[in-house]
Image 1 (tube, helix red, strand yellow):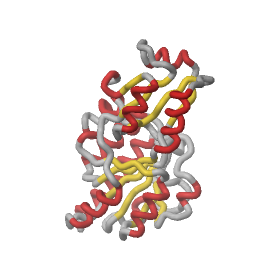
Image 2 (spheres, one colour; image 1 turned 90 degrees about the vertical axis):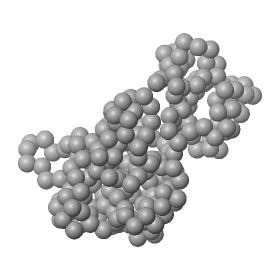
Image 3 (tube, rainbow, N blue to C red; image 1 turned 45 degrees about the vertical axis):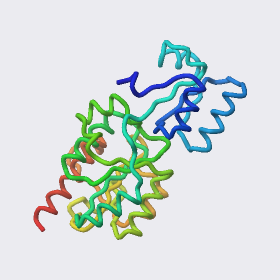
Image 4 (cartoon, rainbow, N blue to C red; image 1 turned 180 degrees about the vertical axis):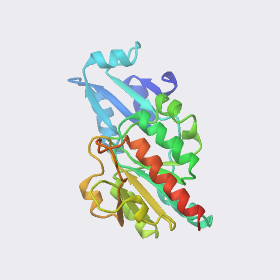
Length: 246
């Protein structure tokens, strides 16, 4: 899977971007210069592609081939357009249920969440272009292939998706400990989108300010947090439970 989702070489990456390939991330060699390298940097900035400058040793570990100072990870899936996806779900007559992931970084958590989302009938997953876990071989394996069965969208910022959901009549619910409400106090029966935060920082504070509702999981033990994929499963199955009782 790694070979299928990785390309190397400055010119090859430029051609892939220009051809419209879904690039998850580009690793660039620190301190490298040159006209072609500068062209690649400019293209990356223009397209808003996630990039990191790393030592050459990192690139050598990614591939044994002649990488020329650049290695890119290509997504094995085609990402969906958010506006088209939301419109299609609404027009289908279903009660929409979307999942927003605010810079979730661990690919195994990402894969596990995708698997649970597919099992609970989520209509689509929205992620941010930069800062989140990529769709790679580990994601595919952990999701048990569910990544190929559920639409995934990329946006410049999660707040963009929040505003669009709200404008489309979809309630946005944040899974956060910064509230007195538990998930059992919130209605998931109407059209809604659930936001899960990153493993270390949770949901961005600026995003929390614009959501329609907040909810937390009741925790009875000494450890006051759950793995994000486990927490996400609890929220999604509460949505399923409520909707089954309609």
